[in-house]
Image (tube, rainbow, N blue to C red; front, side, top):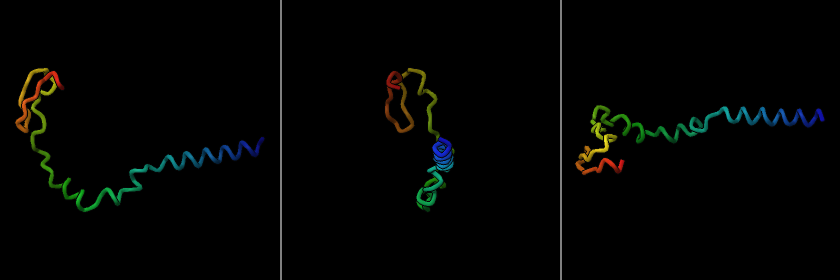
Length: 73
């Protein structure tokens, strides 16, 4: 009985340690290639992204020039 509890506690401890390591950090080198970083740096963060009419329920023209029916949102 004691041996079973020890094995179970060891298995749970190993599982908790493995879960503590985020999977996203393990693949950081693949995600941060120079191509991905270059496009992120050259993005225009000051560009308009919203018309502020998105949730009013009224028809409007979005920033790309398309007519949007407010009820579709």
